[in-house]
Length: 287
Ligand SMILES: Cc1cc2nc3c(=O)[nH]c(=O)nc-3n(C[C@H](O)[C@H](O)[C@H](O)COP(=O)(O)O)c2cc1C
Image (cartoon, rainbow, N blue to C red; front, side, top):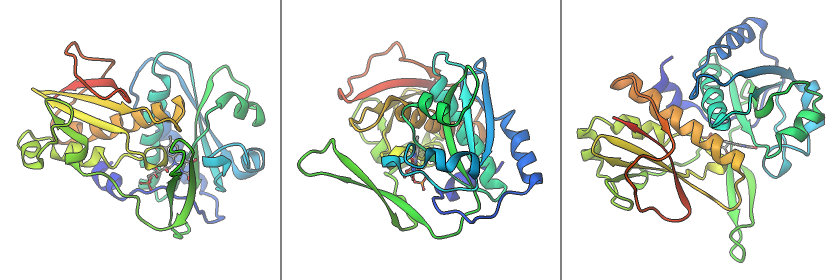
């Protein structure tokens, strides 16, 4: 796949045409998702493709931001074995499938859910695996909408989300999300370019995240890249870990494509970094 181009162009699609996807394209997608990329190799994932009539009414007020379910002709469900880092792994794998779908001309959007078990029950899905992702799928009707978060002045933890007509979802700059050696030392893009990592960070920061909160920060330190994620009060563990898996995929795709094959290590490096209390170091890699 032409990952850079796909990452740069793909946006969340919240309004779909009624048309269903052709069996040929469904077949290509199924073939792809059986071999999509994984962050952790030995976790079994089962993928199910469902049509609107099997899902929409049952989840209408039970999934999505503020329980606003996205109305789409199809949905893909990712069900995973529950092993260490299985949520990050599904974030990583499912985002790769979204990129493939986009390459095939199909729009998509993550649908949040903080309690996979109750949704699995509603949908009568019978498997031991944990429902770990739902993604809406179909043809974009080109009425772009984006999501905005209104944080109450009086109670910042009570954010409400609205979906408004727009076609941009802004991202932070490289210098806002990449630090050199220690927290808060904003990277100079020229310096990042000299290290050969400009593209990797440029595309990583285009990663979609829950409510576009862009919780990821990177510390570059002597050949090592450390990934820290912000804990936001109004975000559940599920959303936090899916956001983590997605940004790890984006960074890795570009390094693999432009430099060399790399691997993330989940957890903390030996070296300790002083970071704010609302952030956690979740992974690192050697570049
Ligand atoms: C884990 C996760 C859950 C999301 N859940 C929803 C959702 O329930 N409803 C929705 O409209 N968008 C949802 N989104 C889409 C994000 O709001 C969107 O990716 C972000 O605002 C950036 O916009 P973009 O994808 O168009 O670049 C979700 C994204 C992620 C990563």
